[in-house]
Image 1 (cartoon, helix red, strand yellow):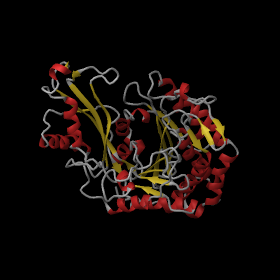
Image 2 (image 1 turned 120 degrees about the vertical axis):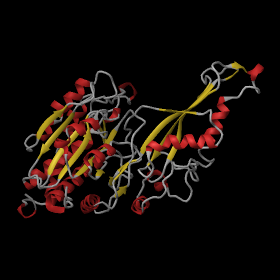
Image 3 (image 1 turned 60 degrees about the vertical axis):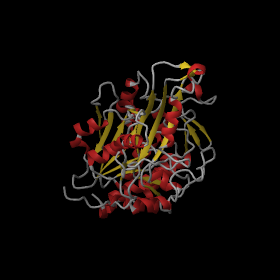
Image 4 (image 1 turned 135 degrees about the vertical axis):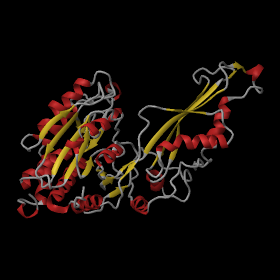
Length: 474
């Protein structure tokens, strides 16, 4: 069911996808999805998460020949997954298409007057609403682009499995267990997810994983109680200064990391090349990189996407809201290390322990943070055949080669899908840096949504037209 039996053509499929946007069908569907308050970080969200999977999203597959199922989360009390499956021929390539239906807290009281997180407001090219970009508007693009190809060609020409989870904003609890439990029905040859912002509004992105993150507290606790500063200052060790010196041993004054074992021994040439080919856009209101901060002799893009970074999330000693005249008993700082697959996340804290001991700070404790701050690194090789094929399809549609980002600078569950499915992972974002995702006034840019529909229709058409890489022997 591919190649010579095609009816219609690629341009026709793209035109259909654009037509869904132009005639209002895309917006109507998105309004319905955004109206479901799927706040996975909030207690009491279970009913809304289930309603999204069982009632809100399934109508998007009407008439497309997909079998829709709701997969229960192995983790008690966590949201389910909606899986829509269309198998045309087991011999054809299979793509697992990812999105997440949950959103962060709506925070309606913090949105601008006249805006409601659960109702889309259209103001020119900006569509305001919680989930318009993160992530309901993005996985809706993938689904409606599938519809465009099926209506134009009569079939896809590949097998599609649309996987929409409802816990991504809470760290995807239970996702790995679900992937293992339902492995037989989730097998695929490639993973394509739609999420996140692009590097530039004028150029599409193809992202290939994520940097990992390890968070921990550094604690210096010298005594149980504070002591009068006049009587004891100068004779009792100050935990704030000790911790400050320990922190300064981790990075130089210019932000270069000094901990052995935290940095990649080398950066693969394909990754370095992809970083240095990236086209960035200066978006008003976003930070500008500080010159001279971080690893010297590296480009900004290499430092963001191919290297390790560490930041201090918080640092406290005493009572900053009401300082007292006392030598404090304790100081505490929370740090987060972001790293690529070239550095093992499990070695971050042991390496720091060795470093602190060698620098004369045995009293500095390292306390792991067992929260969402822990996530693994992942990366698909920029030279992978699937990456080359999808990038070529995007270039064919928009007339320019996309940015190929070796791994996202943010977090996503790429590692779970790469490890459990054993497939290349690719992300195609359709938002921009100023979209306010996770904050009040989240919004999508209408031109990026429309462009995304066309890009995805082109990709689905090309995969089904025989351009997908040959399946390796299993």
